[in-house]
Structures are given as C-alpha cells and as structure tokens.
Image (cartoon, rainbow, N blue to C red; front, top):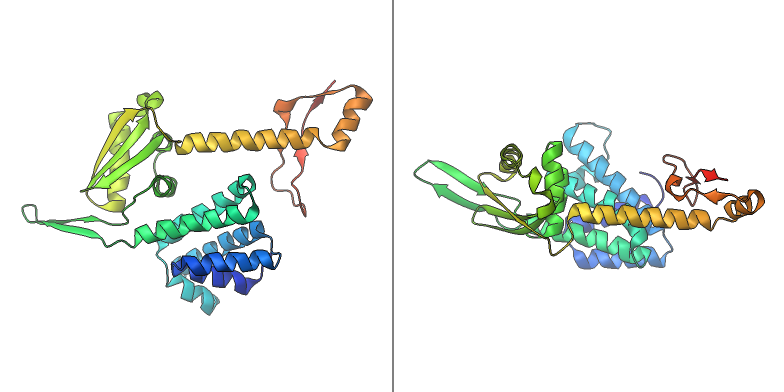
Amino acid sequence: MLGLVLHDDILILATHLFNQDAKEVMNFIKDLAHKGENLSNALRDLSSLFHQISMAKIIKNPQISAEIKALAAKISHQDLQIFYHFSTHGSSEIALAPSEQIGFEMTLLKMLTFNSAENIAENITENIAEKKTVKIANKISSQAEWEALTVTLKFNVAAAMLLKNTIFTDFKNGVLTLILDEKYSNLLTENIHLEISKVLQNHFGELTIKINLAKPKSQTLAQKQSQQNDEKKAKLQEDFLNDKNVQKLQQTFQAKVDLQSIQAVENISNAENSEKSAAINR
C-alpha cells in the first residue's frame, strides 16, 4: 500500500465495491472527503490494493494477509483487471472533473456499473445438432464496458487500433455489433477482422462480430484519449507560462517560450506538483 490513506479505509472501500453496494460506496467517499482525505491518493491506494489482490489470486504466498485473501475470494480475476483499468485511468481523469470528489465518485460508479453487468445470468443454449454449448458470459451493454474490455484483452497492434475507433451498438443473440469510424475503414481487413473474432471468441465463447462503417455520433476511445492529451498539454503550457520564474526569465533575456517543447517530467517525486521542463528560445 502507498500509505497515503488509512489502510483499513481502503480495505473497507474495496469490500463495498466487491459487494456491489453503491450506497455504502458513496457514503464512504463522503466520509473520506469529510475527514479531509486526498481522494486522488485514495484512488492510487485502491489501484495498489487491486494489484495486491490480483497477485494473491495468482501466486500462493503464506505471507499474504487474511484481509487480502478474503477480498480475492470475492471477485473474479476478469473483474479485477477491469477495476484496475478504471482506477488507473481515473487517476489521470480526476484532474479534469469539476471536483476531486466528483471525479472519484464517477470512477467508482464505473466499477459498480460494470460489475453489475458482469453478474447478469449467463446465456447458455445447447446446439444439439453440433453437440456443443454456446456460452455468452460477461455480457457487455455499454460503451464504457466495451472500452474497458478492448484495453484488457490482448489484441495485436492493428486490431487494438481499430477497436479504439469503434462505438459499441449492442450484443444480442450472440451477435456483437460495432460502428467503426469511417475514417479508419482501411483498418478493416479480413486478417484484422479474424484477429478480433479470435480474441473475443476466446473470451466470450461462440459469437459473430458485425462491424459497420459510419461517422460516430459519440466519442470513440481514441477521440477521448486525444482530447484528454490535448487538455493536459494545454494545462501544462498554461501552468508553465504562469510560473513566476519563467516570466522573470522571459523579461530578463527577452526570451520566448517554445510551447511545443513543454513536457511533463515523469517519475520524479514531488510533494504536491510534478515538475515541468521546456526549452526557452531567445
């Protein structure tokens, strides 16, 4: 655990999540906020906990605590991977939310919504003629669930790129229907379609994938990621230009900031803010 928020608080929050108790989750978030806890840190601690639970499900280690083992028994490995995806991505999105609490709540609501869908009764039908069972498990029903699934399953680079530009339509009677942004029609080759079908059939069982070309009426995952990157870059540039030391350098040397060179410096600890770097041209 990162130790940023009380260990027991994170365990309790995870328990409410795994029990799909939305009311308790929301009440607990309010209590954390009331106590003045940093919710961004709480989300990072939650990601760390999901990692520990995932390791506990795979590796037998007598040193694993009873609390971690108990939580590991409450959730499937598939759900855990999706939860980890939501929590890590939520950490980058929380800064864009109207408030830290709203960003934290929305991230956890995604987990609750997806987990609820995961527990819908499995559709199992028997094909007597072929003497085999068709099993559609872990049925998805929303764009958020579809995006989480596409980044969790192991597609090759080309297939992953195509799927980032799709919109989920529906999943009925063993047919998964998607809309592919028509600008990326060149990606829809027979080989890529076969790759997508293979991976999804390994996950869901027998199914048919139907991909229609059209202009999306809502944002694809690729568009969301591009927008988030643009917003982060704009915020980084604004913060840099507003820095008093940078302004002083500009005035002293009559320098001009090369905005395109401004980048976040990764993997450097700082109590409150990550440092930034930029080339300043005369």
